[in-house]
Length: 377
Figure (tube, rainbow, N blue to C red):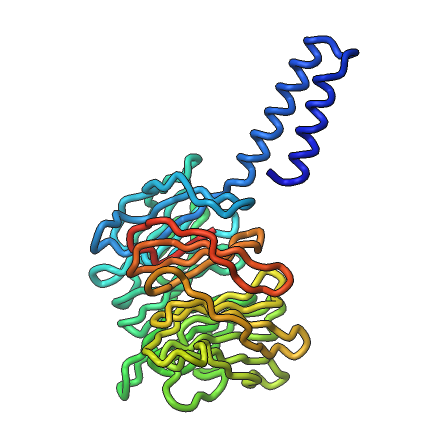
C-alpha cells in the first residue's frame, strides 16, 4: 500500500475511534473510505494486449491486467481467436486495434475493442506481401502502415470512420532484383514515413505530398558491412532516430540536420564478455528520453543506455538477463516505471522495475504466456 492510501486509512481509523461521531456517520465514513481504496486499486490496473504466434498453444490475441503500482500481471484471457497476430497497434483513441497476421500470404486486420476488452473483427485485408511483421498508425489515426518481411514491401491503408480498413492505397516494393528486400518496421512522424529494411541495410524516408507518400531517400545514412536495421525509436521532437541492428548487434544513433540526417554514434548492445551468437530485436526510449533500451536474442538480455539529452549520443550502462529465451519485443508501461519483455521461445513475459534515477532494470517476476511476440499498452 502506498503512502497516500496509508494516510487515508489512518484518517478513517481515527474518525472511527472518535467518541463524538455517532454510529451512522462512522458507518458512512467507513463505506466511503473502503470504496475509495477499492476504486484506487482498480484504477491501478490497466489493460495489456499480447500478440502471438499460433503454431503452438496460442489461440490469438490475449488480454491481461497490469498493476501499475506493483507490476503484477493477472486475469490472462483470450481477447479473440485469430491466426498469428504477430504485431499490434492501437488507434489514437484506443477504440480500435490493428494487427498483422503472419500466416498464409499475409493479412492485415482491424478490430473493435469491446467494453470488456474482448475484440471483434472488423476487416481482414491482404498485407500485399508475405511475412507481415510490423504495423503502426499515424497520429491522426487515418493511415496504417504494414511492413512485409518476406515480401519486401510496405503497404499503406486508409482507415475508415468506424475503424475498419480499406484496401491498401499505396504499396512500396523495395526489391531491386540484386538482393531481396526485408522491410521490418515503419513509423510515421508528422508528414514523414520511415521504414527500416533489414535486407537493404537502410532506413528509407518517404514524405506526404498531395495526400500520398513519395520517396525522399532510400538510405537516410550510409551503412558499412551488414548491420541489418530492424526497429527504430524516434525522439519526441524528431531530431534523433535510434536504429537497432539485428545482424550487427548494435545501435546506430542518427541526428537530423539541415540537409538530411547524419550518424552521430554507434554502440554495441552486447556485454563485453559475451561471445555467442546474437540477433537484436526491439528498441524503445524511456518516457523522459533519458534512457534507451534494446533487446538481444541470443544473449537474452535488455541492453540499457544512458542518453545525452543535448547531443543525442548514448552510453551503455547495463545488460540484464530477460529471465527467458528470445526477447522479440518489449514495452514500457504508460507510467514509465516498468519494462515488460515478451520471451517468445520460453513462453513467458518478464517484468522489470525501472530505477527512475539511473534507468537500470531490476527483475521482479515472470508469468507464463504462449508464444508472446508483441506487447501493447
